[in-house]
Image 1 (cartoon, rainbow, N blue to C red):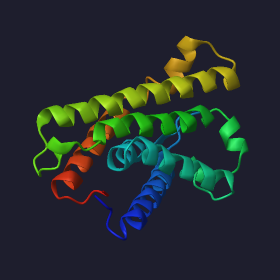
Image 2 (image 1 turned 135 degrees about the vertical axis):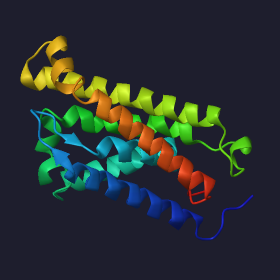
Image 3 (image 1 turned 120 degrees about the horizontal axis):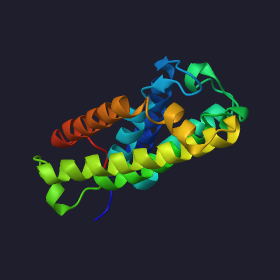
Image 4 (image 1 turned 180 degrees about the vertical axis):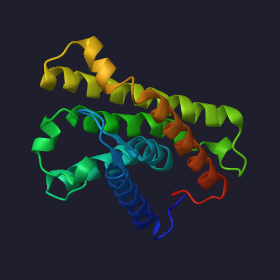
Amino acid sequence: MHDAPLAGLHRLVWTALMAALIAVGAMVMLPVGPVPVTLQTLFVALAGLVLGPARGAGAMLLYVLAGVMGLPVFSGGKAGFAHLLGPTGGYLFGFACMACIAGFGGLRGREARDAAIRLPRVALALCCCLAGLAVAYLAGAARLMQVLDIDVARAVAVGVLPFLPGDVVKVVLAVAAWRFLAVRRLLPR
């Protein structure tokens, strides 16, 4: 079966759109300590679900590349390679892993092509997003430990626990948005 003539372009546009949404999510921030609260988690999970593992991670890496090249897309309007070396750099790399892992929850199989998405499918998407979030937290906390010279307990207290309730809500919203797009057959093919 061949792709439609514009299917490749359609996927590229969706990838760029998800990278742009991740950037917008970084701009919506509440500074609380070394790690700000942002909406990035929602859009990283959504990118994985909508685009799949490879393209979801690709959207996150496109966002990081834009920031490294000087576009002010990181939280607080920051840019540059030095941002990756700072306390939040681990989260950026962890988010690429999160998008990839979340993408496995959004893969479409033969049974998922109908308009109704069954609860187990939504539960799988939620589990994949939460697993990806755990990996993002792991990478972020590890970087916090290194940059701030703190122990594991302090890194978890500063870089994980304050964000956990809000991030779980954001992941649930991402799964709901993905389900909405899937039911209306608006997802890229």
